[in-house]
Image (cartoon, rainbow, N blue to C red; front, side):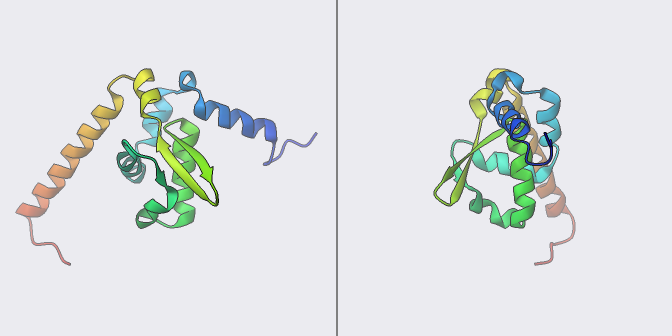
Length: 129
């Protein structure tokens, strides 16, 4: 049988691995969160589920689709379809169970980066608007 792009067995395995907290791998999670845009998506998802369209200010639909897929296949987020919309949510409980304190550490580091960016802009030349 042809095992091409639309191989349903492969797709089912990917969907299962995205939902199974015991199959989360720290290296995959950290690699996915290395991208600043994906970290921004995760930060916005804390405590609430959102429509994918809520992130249109971060990039093009095709680019965001890539980032959503990357977060989902690693197991950081989950998606569900509601009518013609897709809802995305952070799997914070599963990540916390697998890697206690990881998200808190990442968010703390993000806040420090934000603070240092503000200090550099405050001290340096005025920003162009």
